[in-house]
Structures are given as C-alpha cells and as structure tokens.
Figure 1 (cartoon, rainbow, N blue to C red):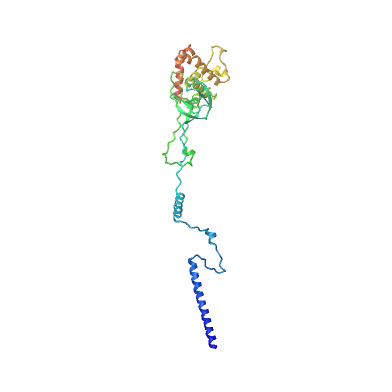
Figure 2: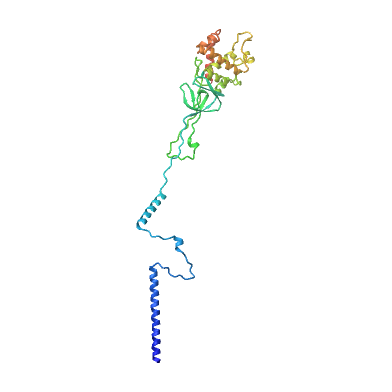
Length: 331
C-alpha cells in the first residue's frame, strides 16, 4: 500500500513538472510569434503608454503605383519650391523731351507765332522756368505748353539728371557719365543800320549803357527790351535815339514831361509835346509809333527813319549810328 502511494505521488510530480515545462515553452513560442504578428509586447505598468497612431496618424496600405506617383509629385513640388523667381523689369527714367530755359527779363510775352507782331497769349515773370521743345532758326523758342518766346530774354538751364532725381532706381546696365552743359550766355550782337533786328542785349547790358547818365535808375531796361520783343525794334537803336533826343536824360522835356524822344515836339515851348506819367511809358509809346508809322510803311533802316523822324538834321543818322557803335564797344 505504501509503495502504491509513493508511486502515485511520483506520477503526480512528474506530470506537474511536464505541464510546467510545456507551459513555459508555449509562452516562449507565443511571445516569439507575437513579435512577427505585430502584437505589442507587454509593458511594465510603471512605463508611460504612447499611442503611435496619435502621432503618425492612421496607417493605410499603399500600392506600388501609388507610391511611385507620390514620389513623382513630391519631386515636382520640391523642384517648384526651390526654383528661382523670374527676373522682373526694373523701371527706368526716361530723359525729358524738352529743354529748360529761365526768363531773364522782368516780363516776357508768350506769342502765338515766333515773331514780335504775333498775338500775345501770356506773360512770364523773371525767373520762370520754361519747357522748350524746339529752338527756331530766328532765335525764338517753342514752348511745350504752346506759344513762343524770344530766346534773347532767356538763358538755358542745365539738364535734369534722372540719376540725381531717382537715386534708388537700380539700372540694368551702367551708363557712361554725362557732361552737363553750362548755360549759354547771351552775347550782344553788333548793331547795324536795320532797326528791326535782335540786339542780344540783356537788362544788365542796358543798365551798363545807362550808367553815369540821367537815364539810370528809372527801370528803362525792361521797357527797351519789351518793345524789341513786341515790335522788333532794335534795343541799340532805341537807346541811341533816347540818348540823342533827351541829352542823356537831362533835357527839359525829359525832366518835366518824361518825354525822352521829343515825341510831338515842334520847338519853342513844345506845349504840344507828349506828356507821360513815367519815362518807361515814353519808351512804350516810341515803340508803338515807330512800328505803326515807320516800320509798317517800309521805313526799316536808320537812314529811312531819319527822313521822316528828323528831316531838318541831315547828321541825325550818323549821330544815332555813332552812339550805337560807342555803346557796343562798352560791353
């Protein structure tokens, strides 16, 4: 009986050992198989659990053709993202299509046509900058806004350099440096016997010719140039007649009636001689009368004017021309 119990106990222990051994082998094979089957390994309870799906997103099966399409698309996007932008056109500053002139006379008339007897359109003050599109052969300037002015009473200004106006504009090509022309000074012309010609005189020139006489300080420079511009009466001629007839501004008519040319004077008391509010008004009247009663009737030289203006003095033409020649040498 005791042997039978010992035998049974031995069988029980043997079976238990066999079960434990088989169970351990099964567990080991199961864990190994779980690795190939994407079965997550058990983690210690103390370790934090991380959900890969929340980070990487859902995983879907991808076919080979789809993968190739995605690779091509990715390559195209990458190429577009690193491609350089096409160069843009940079603005350039065009050279102005006009020249700039500044008025030097106190007032300068703008006329419809390039001659002194043309219709008056406007008047520009001294210092006004004019935009000129063309210089005429006779010296007149055609304005951009319309009309003409006499170029003898202006001076050309330097051209505007676009690089100075727009220093921040980048140029595509480097341009050679330009030389800015200096303003051309007006040179007095040599006087002739023709009373309708350009003198080339400026207010400064005429003031120099009046210096030391009683004609200085009466602002006659502007009036003399005005009748040359308006009627074409040469300034040398006007000044010479003025000096001769007024005794350089010291005659009685010049002092009492501001009459510098002996206009309508008949001798004696000269009670019929014209009386003017200013000496400048006397110059304006001289220009009007000479244009209307002499130039328009063909009296266009000093000798011809003398036959009507002062017929009693045969030396009048030579006296006038002598003053004109002397004044030209002073400049």
